[in-house]
Length: 278
Figure 1 (tube, rainbow, N blue to C red):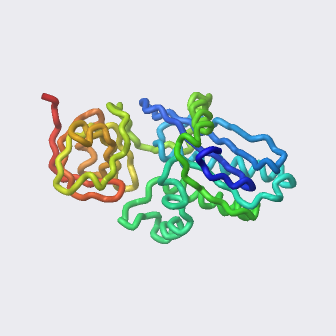
Figure 2 (cartoon, rainbow, N blue to C red):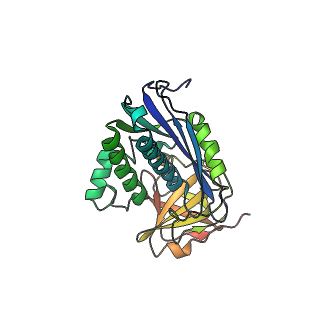
Figure 3 (tube, rainbow, N blue to C red):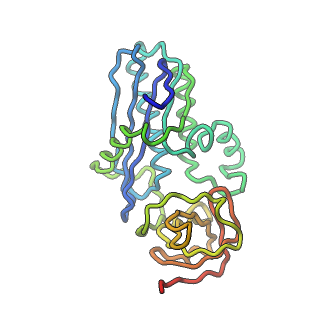
């Protein structure tokens, strides 16, 4: 594949997700498997869906899980044709989900020891799916005796899986296996990227629009969009406690003051006010 380094003796499993930010967060996942030329097997393209009431990271993790399950089925039915394979690479276009971050086997081992909490003592988001990926990886390794990697690649290299995912989200029966119970979804105003949290600081005031709230054990993740200034349209994740959460209403806009900045979220002062455009 031009522009992407490919091991000609490896199996590549491209995994992607697609979501409509509607009232149910309707989504699908897609998996594409490419076999080496030396293997007498046709490639596989599979759309899977329709999922509801999840978030995009859970869908992206589910795409990897479905890719792993599909590959296990292939090895169990075509084992004789795959004896020369030495490596299996799962491709995701979500940087945080590659072996360098969320799916890193050493990090997963440490999170298990900590009771699935981060080094900031925050409950690990989507720990159930990360745990399942780690166990499936081990199962694949034992069955195939192959090195198994989860590798990041830019979205342009994952377009076939993305197209399959778009088909999947229009599937028939609703899959509820990864839904988030208690999640409250509103309408988004913008389509901007998640902010680089190095661009915000303690004491900074921002006007934000609330579009989603997700429970995470005894805290809430409040998804917001910045409405004004040089950071306008960027997504900002606010972690709220049980006192703050009821004060944030979906589809409302607030003036907030940042209390603490972390790698992937912020906390805000208890006092914030609803903001009305002039």
